[in-house]
Amino acid sequence: MDSPSPTRPPLRHVLSSAQFDRPFLDYLVTLTTTIRRFDKSREGMVYLQSLLAHKRAMLYFTQPSTRTFLSFQSACHILGITASEIRDASTSSERKGESVEDSLRTFSSYVDLIIMRSPIPRLCERIATMLDETPRPVPIINAGSGPDEHPTQALLDIYTLSRSLRLEGGIEGKTICMVGDLKRGRTVRSLARLLINYPGVKILFASPPAFRIEEDLRADLKAANVDFEETTAFESAIAAADAIYMTRIQDEYDAPGAVRSDDHSAYHLTAGHLPQLKKSCAILHPLPRRNELDPAIDQDPRAKYWRQERNGMWVRVALLTILCGIDDRVQLPEL
Ligand code: CP
Image (cartoon, rainbow, N blue to C red; front, side, top):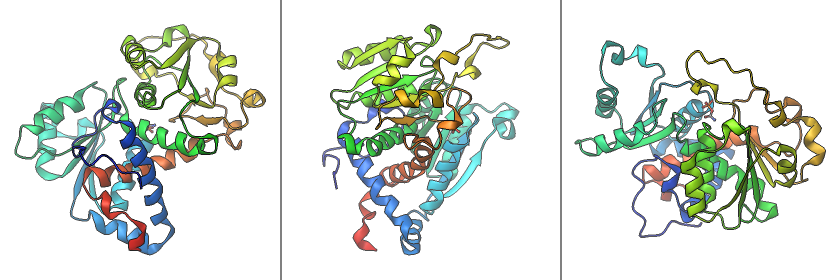
């Protein structure tokens, strides 16, 4: 199995996709594929459940989530981790005026790991720094931080791209087209930063002018010499792509009371576009979707988004084994 450098420091927190390099990504992809094979037998699943039965995790999600929450919860169950949850700060003592810092420090008194989604950008970094100075510096996993980052989504996207493009030689040298709200789409920001690790990748950012990528991402891509283009020419971009990454308009970040009447249908992927796409093109979407991705595409073999969300559970299992330092115990010959 590809293994991370022996000099690599142990994974402490998962805060930003910028913390991952290519050896780590290759190792995670291989480890995830290995772990998925445990699912093929009862003995395999019982073995996985025995690995972390002594650990407890907190799922603190104060922004809505379906698949990130459920896939992390399922990943905990698969590894035997007992998972507690808060899904609405109004049901916690934050309602009584407790600060978010004190709430998270309280969780660290009871659990070994905190997985958190928050509308507040960089809150995870702040909490990780704070906890690192306490007697219980439990690891923090960023499960989505406002419009800023969603690093574990980017890891599962890399896994899905690696698997989907493996017959075409993998991600290196491929053209990846990202579509939609590229300004506020945290999955786009985190994935684009991971793509820096794949030489020869070209990124086509296709979006309405109001939703172009932010300057910090543009600067990071330039500094890393990534070949990228920002375009409004949706149809020619998708026709050139080896993979298309669709995203929805993130209107939860609109100013309060804002009424948007703009029409983004020129950036919707429909069944009518399928004949224009490459035969091996992989179509991804972090989901949930609205009307930017036609359900009529779901049956096309190039549609990878349902597989992508299931991959998310296994990538998160693999990540938890690394974070808890037991990835060396996930080897099939033991079965
Ligand atoms: N992709 C993603 O983060 O989905 P949820 O918001 O449903 O967790």
